[in-house]
Amino acid sequence: MPYFVQSGLVREDDRAAFRGVVLDLLRLRDATFPWAMIAGVVLAWHTVSLYDAVQKMRVAPIGMRSLAPILIPVAVPMLVVAAIEVPIGELLLKLVSTLA
Image (cartoon, rainbow, N blue to C red; front, side, top):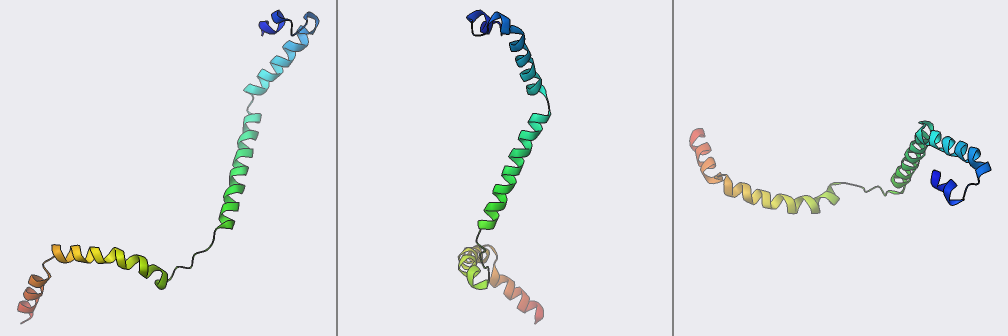
């Protein structure tokens, strides 16, 4: 703060008023209320923007017709891997021999 006075930006007779303004600003900076207000505004803005984004979303109808093109290509490789890993023929033979 002394640089404002030394540089001549603040006259000697305005020094007390300048000091009062600086102290008021420091109190405002250190107070909780302004920061709570800023946080409240940010939270409100974020909530409104999320609400707006949800309102603009299109609802996608999901049914068996729309899932089949996705699930079939996913399931086929899994079935192939399962058939390679699990000896289906041996299991069927053991099952038939046990039932017979």
